[in-house]
Amino acid sequence: MYSRIVVAVDLEHTAQAQDLLARAVALLNRDGEIRLIHVLEEVPGYIAAELPRDLAERRRAEAAVELRTMIDPDQPVQITHEVRRGAASGQIIQAAEDSAADLIMIASHRPGLRDYFIGSTAARVIRHARCSVLVER
Image 1 (cartoon, one colour):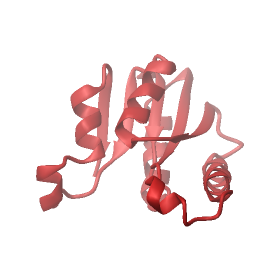
Image 2: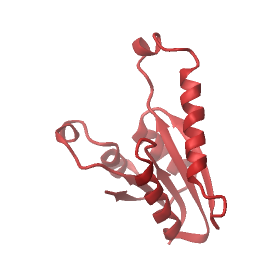
Image 3: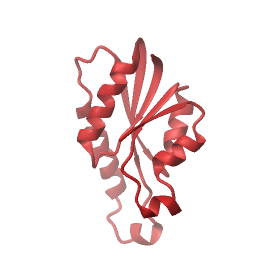
Image 4: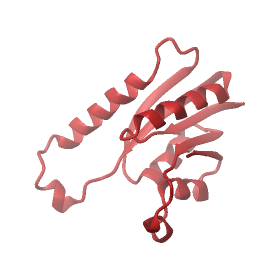
C-alpha cells in the first residue's frame, strides 16, 4: 500500500483516467492522499501569437473543471487536483517530488515508431522518477 500517489492523467482519454484513479484508490493506505494532475503542454510562441490572449487561461480552467468532475465527493480518501503547464514528464516528476510521493501512476499507449526515436512521456517518467512508477496500458 502507498501513502502518497501522483496520478497523471490525459484528459483526452477520460475513461482510461477514471480507471487509473480507481486503481490508485485501491492501492492507497487509509490515511493516504492522491494528487491527480494534468499537464498542459506549452504552445510554441509563433503559434501562440496567433491565438487569443486568454486561451491558455481558459484551457487551464477547463482542465481544472474536468479533473474536479473525475473526483467522487463521497470518496473516503483525500484527492486533490492540479493543472500544471510545461513538459509533461518533467512536471509529473516534479509533482511527485513536491508531494513526496511514493508512487506515480500514468497511462500509456501502445508504442509507435515515433516513441522509439523520441520516447513517450511514460518512458521518460520511468527513467527519471525517484519513486516507483506504475504504467497502465
